[in-house]
Image (cartoon, rainbow, N blue to C red):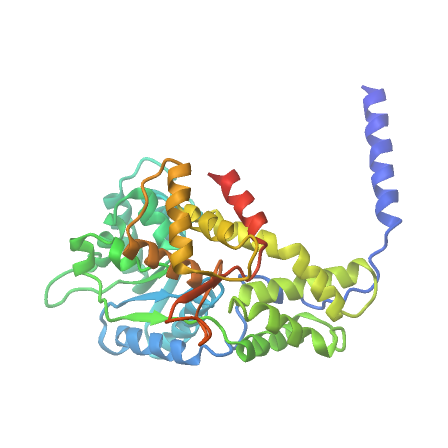
Length: 405
């Protein structure tokens, strides 16, 4: 026993000596949290219109004691989650000034992908020690109702990445339960409102009873960020996260150029964070464009992999076809990609999609930034769509997808 303790102590001493041999020095960061994906800044650059739209939709909660719902949609990295958090925080303050107790809870449906898990997350916002099993959805709903009545509160439930939940459960019952949560009648109590967030049009995934309760006009769409919009976001985060003069003037411009291909603010912020880490690692005290280029080389594959893991088999097969079509050229046409897709389906013994569905999936892949589609120039006969891969070599993408399948 003593011998074992001795070796543990020696190992610990070696670890500590190794750590002290590489002192970090002064970091370029002053507030690392400002680069976290969950961080909510005081202002959201270029999302004022969407914020106002949400206030218009949910204002009647305070003015007229009614319930509302909304659907926030847009590609990856367009600020859907941070917009919902910022809105709920600001609306909570607005309601309080109007004498209304509004609370909110955000549920990530990728992490909590069953109806019971969603309900448990909502309930523990009020009852932290509520049992994690032994209660039906109806019983949990009733318990939630009692809590809201006791606190005289109106709850906004935000279901982020709700398409994952709907796909996993193959049911939209939870949406129906939330939509029908409020009492009926002249003196009905309106206790709950709902925000759904997804890249996909989840309204198409709802059954008729659930869809009938959802106001389909309350849709807030977020487009990909433009280059100058990304620049504004980066400059804000640099000011919040880094010491003064710790970031070279050219860094934000370079990152905005790189990330504008995807219109993805998450990617831009991650590049900024990684560039700062590389500057710290080299103890250089200044984040430079060279750190930025090195950061892109490390990040691009992991960003793409996270997007690929969410795709079903048909979308992966379409991407394999595009990758194979692009092995020796910069662009392929939709026609050539579809022909290659037919061959890929034969190779994988999978029934191929029809042209309309194929085209729909192409647009989805373009929206999430895995491929880039644009109209052909005048040099080509007729008008067609050209497809490229903006952020990963074709050979690498094909290999990753084949491994996943």
